[in-house]
Length: 115
Image (cartoon, rainbow, N blue to C red; front, side, top):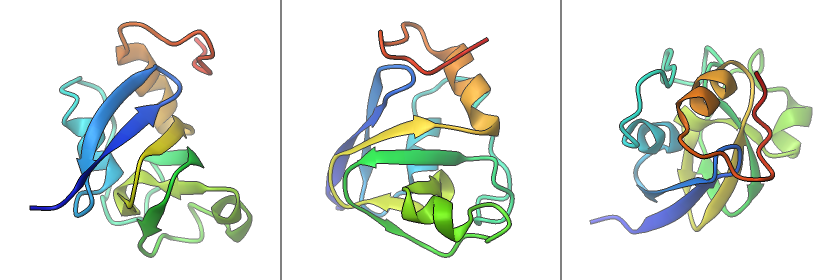
């Protein structure tokens, strides 16, 4: 059984456990909220873009049309292609941010969600 790590969604204050052999997007889906958009699940559509603000992870190949080299260097990745190697903090950005923030029950004081 794979080790599980705590993932913090900074936009909403939510936390969930994600196994090392499970991508971050799958873990988000397990929160049980409707409306978390998913696309190709293979790193080619860019729907699940997140910004990793802290923590170690392993990333698989992502389309350069979705995540530039500059974004990658800043920790912007696709949740469907990232696997936690320890505790992670992230901000949901792009197309997924509106849905994730809308479904959150209690945003944190430093929430970056906007209407």
